[in-house]
Amino acid sequence: MRLAELSGRSGVSTATIKYYLREGLLPPGRRITATQAEYGEEHLRRLRLVRALIQVGKIPVASAREVLAALEDDTLDHNARLGTAVWALPHGPAPAEDDPATGAARRSADELLRRVGWGCGGDAEAPSPAYGMLVTAITALARLGYPCSVDDLEPYARAMGRLAGTDLDLVERYGGSPDEQVEAAVALTVLYEPVLLSLRRLAEAEESRRRFAGK
Amino acid sequence: MRLAELSGRSGVSTATIKYYLREGLLPPGRRITATQAEYGEEHLRRLRLVRALIQVGKIPVASAREVLAALEDDTLDHNARLGTAVWALPHGPAPAEDDPATGAARRSADELLRRVGWGCGGDAEAPSPAYGMLVTAITALARLGYPCSVDDLEPYARAMGRLAGTDLDLVERYGGSPDEQVEAAVALTVLYEPVLLSLRRLAEAEESRRRFAGK
Image (cartoon, rainbow over all chains, first blue to last red; front, side, top):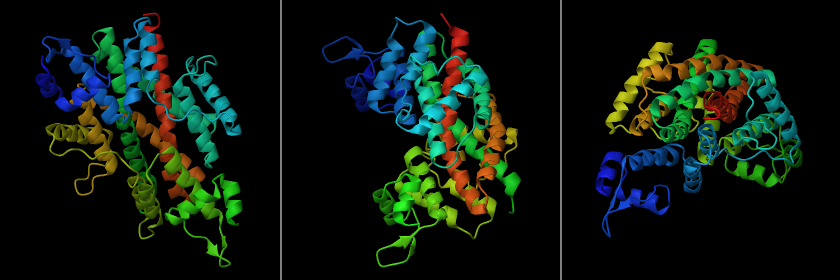
């Protein structure tokens, strides 16, 4: 398809598509004349992913470029490509190693992962960025006067453990080829975050009404 | 306590505290001389909440001021104050009413809330901002090629429903007085978001390893 059709089918303006092409977020089309290029279904898919990252995930262009580069690395096996692409998503500030609360938070995170039996994450040689994000979050809770124990964290981990099966079922449903699965894993990770957070606030409002209505 | 002690105990520099006072994020202290004021435990607590909102939640100063104003509204009953303060948190862009996908997303959200039996949220007269956030998220999924059914969403709602009990137990544990409970509800809503999202990514990595390892 030509640029105009890619724009029509994706709902992204031609100016924005050209910007994504210049920034390397979208691979170039197959050049057919000096001024025209031909785009395929893979461009349409990639464009959707770019919009999920940038418009919904509010991820900076440079980080989005890193995520997309990780998708392309075909020296890795499928699981490693899935992991690498999700790892390239922004994870907020890394733990402050000079903060004494960070050591305690790290021990809580390690104990939590041990309890739920997750082997990933706290690997000392290549800690997952999501593990760093968890340690930063536990440190912030303690520093701001809401220290949490491993017992407090466990229900959250168990809930996310149960949902991970649902998350991966969706990845397999939307991803026909391994390439599409890696794209779906990244897009669904980002796109379901506001789903989860909005449902949490609605659930809290409901629970609060039950406990405190009229008080 | 004087400004220096408030700074020492909170870990917030005196310059930042003065900035928060000027911006109205922190109520003024009790003036004891022309140049000195006395601060209480309520200032220390409020300072922790401001840091949770601004440093962890990345909430703009103007929005933080709105959240804090909602905390003070003592014309409301306790449950309404809890709700109003959490409602004042930023919820991302409202649904685009001119997008045909928004109507479909709204019907999915309504059906979902009916299934899980939550009365809040979709009230036509005063829809909760979290409801708008959910509709926006469902619309984005559809527009970006990952349409979701009510069946797809239900496990996420059930999981958040179960966790809301845990969330509110924490609010009651940390909040002695009703004022402290409202502060704790806002702080814990914001501070547990990165906990949840990081645990979700760790859980997905674990599930992915189980399904795809070596593939």
